[in-house]
Image (tube, rainbow, N blue to C red; front, side):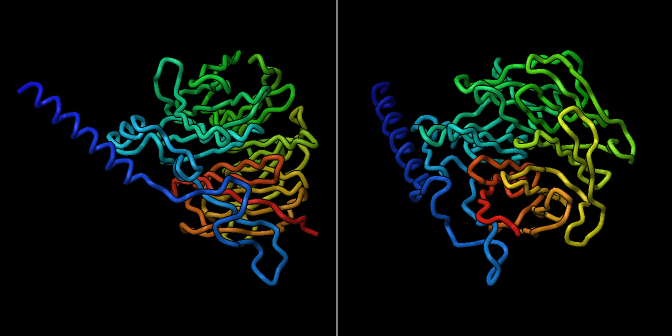
Length: 348
């Protein structure tokens, strides 16, 4: 009887695995940056295309990554949560073609190694989950910094490690959100203190700037930050002042633009911010469900988006990243996906 039960269990498990593999089959996928699913671009014809839709990612399979049989089975038994984006808030791509996605819905960071077809769930070193990973930034040697707004801490993910370790800062943080890194600084948006903290890459505080207010250089719940590679200028989304502020790398105020409202170009809820290599400034607005593109003077060049689930439509977009190939990665949070675009022409 015992032998019969063992045999029956083995056959059942084999059949279950086979059924599971069959249900997970997906069509072939061309790698990021190659031909798009559909020829969709902005502005629409007869305008000259400036931004082209490339693809969208919701699961590892969308990148041609297939987990092993036992990992698939474990993920299936867990409801598929291990391998699907739930509520992504940030996405970055390293030069090694490794895509990291901060996902508070999964309480983890996804690491998609596109070249080696590998997907990992990054948690803390002791196996504990993140609580609210919000923003990401690439540091030296392609290390990745992660802010957790609920744990009030920044963490560091090394490319050869499957976990995150605390990045020790010399002062306590109070709801850290946006992150930016240059050759000497880690900038942290300290949202509840309405300020930006600048640390060296060992975690020592170098300087801080900002306080609550509406004047130049003051903030009202800032959220995201971007260090422009060519100038090292800092762009900060001053969310509840409904504007974008620009600073030099030492925190000295340069300029600002933006206003609340419902018209094209208004910024009622600015979130993610980034620049391309031509100096165009991209701002996500979660209330407008849009990606708006400005020049450095704050003049609107192009408006993309509305609420929806199609290409170029958004539902509470949060984080944006632009790599040196002019690929634009947008964390489309409540659509549970990352949308990928490419800048294909300079606005004149």
